[in-house]
Image 1 (spheres, rainbow, N blue to C red):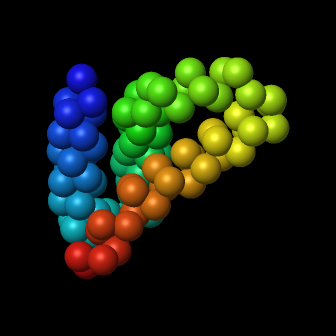
Image 2: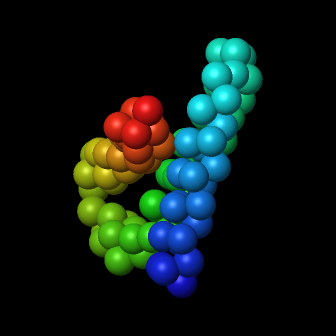
Length: 86
């Protein structure tokens, strides 16, 4: 199942790259950017099932830092490849 998540992330990045290369207005760009960021977050969250089980047993502050770090990582994953290529 993890390979499927990696393939979905790759497909999502390709769709996002072609959507950003169209030079859309900012309103439409934000409508594409937030769902792609959320999908990346969801796919990364499901890609690491062992970390989810580990984080259940720790304190709340550790879990908050884990989710914030995962959120930032998904944002970098969303914007990183398109900024490097473009």
